[in-house]
Image (cartoon, rainbow, N blue to C red):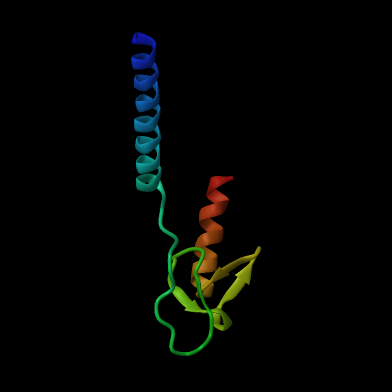
Length: 84
């Protein structure tokens, strides 16, 4: 009878562990940013520097990154030169 009790405790422990892991995983995950409503019909993208949502056609592109303005591109470049 004690082996059955031990087995039940182990199973219960594993279930509690799985539930705790799932809950903490969901709490730690960051939600995917969603673009605001767009009435222009153009896809919106996020500036790589300031994270502002802008129409894709209005962007400045550099190294596969999109920027809302030349100023954001320059600021991003200066920030990343300091990191190197």
